[in-house]
Length: 114
Picture 1 (tube, rainbow, N blue to C red):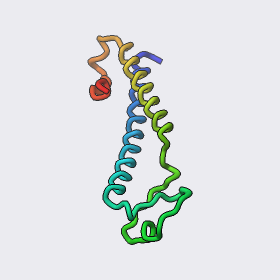
Picture 2: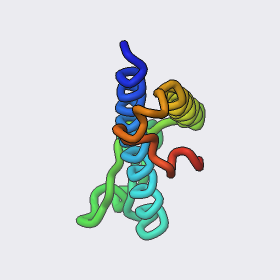
Picture 3: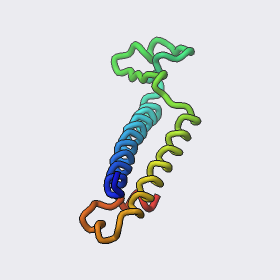
């Protein structure tokens, strides 16, 4: 694989992973909003403890699948993976000859600052 192909592969991998991480962050944000606005009407399904009927049976109840919720350890592992994928992408970019860089889209600057 050429250095350009390695870079493009690493960048695509990072971008896919960052999109997935962003989707999970949105899920966390949605749960946080429900917890702040409707704590009496939200419930996690598929968890051991139960809540009063009005939490789950009301017309405006909100339910989230508890089995899809990540632990702090799982989130830490996702963050470690993000850092590794970013490192791989920036390292691959560094290996691209400078005369080829103008023809490529470099790593997103916002990722460089994180």
